[in-house]
Image (cartoon, rainbow, N blue to C red):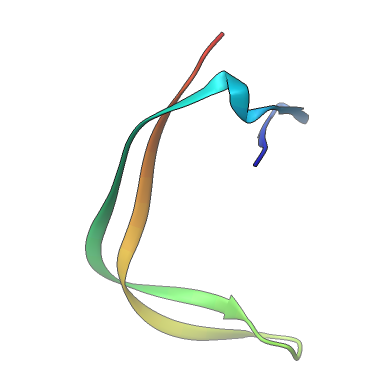
Length: 55
């Protein structure tokens, strides 16, 4: 997993995950299909991660 900032990639070693939780809400997600296009789906959860960059 890489994080990009300003066009340069940084390793995950400089990031610390503080919190991870699931937020429940009704949202629309657009998933790619094998053909050209996207399929709209209803989702009921969002995975959230709170991270800090160590400098």
